[in-house]
Image (cartoon, rainbow, N blue to C red):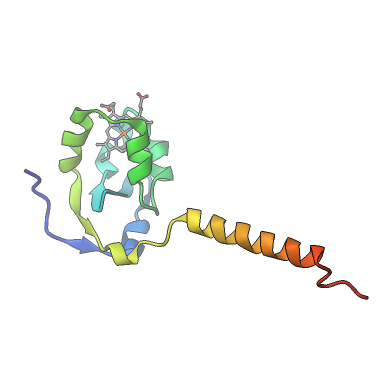
Length: 116
Ligand code: HEM
Protein backbone atom coordinates (compact mmCIF):
# COMPACT_ATOMS: atom_id res chain seq x y z
CA UNK A 1 0.00 0.00 0.00
CA UNK A 2 1.11 3.53 -0.72
CA UNK A 3 1.94 5.41 2.45
CA UNK A 4 2.34 9.05 1.53
CA UNK A 5 1.17 12.01 3.56
CA UNK A 6 -2.40 12.92 2.75
CA UNK A 7 -1.46 16.33 1.44
CA UNK A 8 -2.82 18.19 -1.59
CA UNK A 9 -0.54 20.61 -3.45
CA UNK A 10 -1.34 23.38 -5.89
CA UNK A 11 0.36 23.27 -9.29
CA UNK A 12 2.05 26.62 -8.72
CA UNK A 13 3.80 25.39 -5.59
CA UNK A 14 4.87 22.12 -7.26
CA UNK A 15 6.26 24.02 -10.27
CA UNK A 16 8.62 26.00 -8.05
CA UNK A 17 10.60 22.81 -7.36
CA UNK A 18 12.18 22.66 -10.78
CA UNK A 19 15.91 22.44 -10.27
CA UNK A 20 18.77 20.17 -9.39
CA UNK A 21 18.35 18.73 -5.85
CA UNK A 22 14.93 20.36 -5.58
CA UNK A 23 12.76 18.56 -8.06
CA UNK A 24 9.08 17.62 -7.80
CA UNK A 25 7.10 15.73 -10.44
CA UNK A 26 3.39 15.29 -11.10
CA UNK A 27 2.55 11.79 -12.33
CA UNK A 28 -0.97 10.30 -12.43
CA UNK A 29 -2.40 12.84 -10.00
CA UNK A 30 0.34 12.35 -7.42
CA UNK A 31 3.26 14.57 -6.45
CA UNK A 32 6.75 13.06 -6.18
CA UNK A 33 9.79 14.68 -4.57
CA UNK A 34 12.57 13.01 -6.57
CA UNK A 35 15.33 15.40 -5.39
CA UNK A 36 17.26 12.62 -3.65
CA UNK A 37 16.86 10.22 -6.59
CA UNK A 38 17.99 12.53 -9.39
CA UNK A 39 21.61 11.43 -9.49
CA UNK A 40 20.67 7.75 -9.47
CA UNK A 41 17.79 7.83 -11.94
CA UNK A 42 18.77 5.45 -14.77
CA UNK A 43 17.13 7.82 -17.27
CA UNK A 44 19.29 10.72 -16.10
CA UNK A 45 18.55 13.89 -14.13
CA UNK A 46 17.90 16.04 -17.21
CA UNK A 47 14.70 14.13 -17.99
CA UNK A 48 13.46 14.90 -14.48
CA UNK A 49 14.15 18.59 -14.97
CA UNK A 50 12.39 18.59 -18.33
CA UNK A 51 9.38 16.90 -16.69
CA UNK A 52 8.92 19.61 -14.01
CA UNK A 53 6.29 22.33 -14.24
CA UNK A 54 3.81 20.11 -16.06
CA UNK A 55 1.81 16.92 -15.80
CA UNK A 56 4.57 14.36 -16.51
CA UNK A 57 2.23 11.36 -16.68
CA UNK A 58 2.62 10.90 -20.42
CA UNK A 59 6.42 11.34 -20.31
CA UNK A 60 6.60 8.70 -17.58
CA UNK A 61 4.33 6.26 -19.40
CA UNK A 62 6.00 6.74 -22.79
CA UNK A 63 9.24 5.32 -21.34
CA UNK A 64 7.48 2.09 -20.38
CA UNK A 65 8.90 1.98 -16.85
CA UNK A 66 9.18 -1.44 -15.20
CA UNK A 67 7.23 -2.73 -12.20
CA UNK A 68 10.34 -2.07 -10.12
CA UNK A 69 10.24 1.61 -11.08
CA UNK A 70 6.53 1.78 -10.18
CA UNK A 71 7.24 0.30 -6.75
CA UNK A 72 10.07 2.77 -6.19
CA UNK A 73 7.74 5.67 -6.89
CA UNK A 74 5.80 5.15 -3.66
CA UNK A 75 8.90 6.02 -1.70
CA UNK A 76 9.04 9.49 -3.28
CA UNK A 77 5.34 10.34 -3.16
CA UNK A 78 4.60 13.34 -0.93
CA UNK A 79 0.91 13.84 -1.74
CA UNK A 80 -1.57 14.62 -4.48
CA UNK A 81 -1.99 17.43 -6.97
CA UNK A 82 -5.09 19.62 -6.91
CA UNK A 83 -6.24 18.80 -10.45
CA UNK A 84 -8.12 22.10 -10.80
CA UNK A 85 -4.79 23.99 -10.61
CA UNK A 86 -3.08 22.12 -13.48
CA UNK A 87 -2.97 24.27 -16.64
CA UNK A 88 -4.75 23.04 -19.74
CA UNK A 89 -2.53 20.89 -21.95
CA UNK A 90 -0.58 22.53 -24.73
CA UNK A 91 -2.41 20.50 -27.37
CA UNK A 92 -5.41 22.73 -26.88
CA UNK A 93 -3.28 25.84 -27.31
CA UNK A 94 -1.85 24.42 -30.54
CA UNK A 95 -5.36 23.62 -31.73
CA UNK A 96 -6.41 27.20 -30.97
CA UNK A 97 -3.43 28.65 -32.85
CA UNK A 98 -4.16 26.37 -35.80
CA UNK A 99 -7.82 27.45 -35.85
CA UNK A 100 -6.87 31.13 -35.59
CA UNK A 101 -4.34 30.89 -38.46
CA UNK A 102 -6.89 29.04 -40.57
CA UNK A 103 -9.51 31.63 -39.87
CA UNK A 104 -7.16 34.55 -40.72
CA UNK A 105 -5.94 32.99 -43.94
CA UNK A 106 -9.46 32.36 -45.18
CA UNK A 107 -10.40 35.93 -44.25
CA UNK A 108 -7.44 37.18 -46.30
CA UNK A 109 -8.35 34.87 -49.17
CA UNK A 110 -11.87 36.30 -49.05
CA UNK A 111 -10.50 39.81 -49.41
CA UNK A 112 -10.68 41.01 -45.81
CA UNK A 113 -7.97 43.56 -45.14
CA UNK A 114 -7.55 44.46 -48.82
CA UNK A 115 -7.35 48.20 -49.50
CA UNK A 116 -9.93 48.19 -52.29
C1 HEM B 1 9.23 8.94 -9.44
C2 HEM B 1 9.41 8.89 -10.75
C3 HEM B 1 10.36 7.95 -11.46
C4 HEM B 1 11.00 6.82 -11.03
C5 HEM B 1 10.95 6.18 -9.63
C6 HEM B 1 11.78 6.32 -12.15
C7 HEM B 1 12.57 5.18 -12.10
C8 HEM B 1 13.24 4.65 -13.17
C9 HEM B 1 13.92 3.36 -13.18
C10 HEM B 1 14.00 2.40 -11.99
C11 HEM B 1 14.44 3.19 -14.41
C12 HEM B 1 15.22 1.94 -14.94
C13 HEM B 1 14.36 1.17 -15.94
C14 HEM B 1 13.08 0.64 -15.32
O1 HEM B 1 13.16 -0.07 -14.30
O2 HEM B 1 11.99 0.92 -15.87
C15 HEM B 1 14.13 4.37 -15.19
C16 HEM B 1 14.53 4.60 -16.50
C17 HEM B 1 14.21 5.71 -17.23
N1 HEM B 1 13.36 6.73 -16.86
FE1 HEM B 1 12.51 6.93 -15.04
N2 HEM B 1 11.62 7.14 -13.23
C18 HEM B 1 10.75 8.13 -12.86
C19 HEM B 1 10.29 9.18 -13.65
C20 HEM B 1 10.65 9.39 -14.95
C21 HEM B 1 10.16 10.46 -15.80
C22 HEM B 1 9.13 11.51 -15.39
C23 HEM B 1 10.79 10.32 -17.01
C24 HEM B 1 10.65 11.14 -18.26
C25 HEM B 1 10.52 12.41 -18.29
C26 HEM B 1 11.67 9.18 -16.92
C27 HEM B 1 12.50 8.76 -17.94
C28 HEM B 1 13.28 7.62 -17.90
C29 HEM B 1 14.12 7.18 -18.98
C30 HEM B 1 14.34 7.90 -20.32
C31 HEM B 1 14.70 5.98 -18.57
C32 HEM B 1 15.72 5.14 -19.33
C33 HEM B 1 15.05 4.06 -20.11
C34 HEM B 1 16.09 3.20 -20.80
O3 HEM B 1 17.11 3.73 -21.22
O4 HEM B 1 15.85 2.00 -20.84
N3 HEM B 1 11.56 8.65 -15.67
N4 HEM B 1 13.39 5.24 -14.41
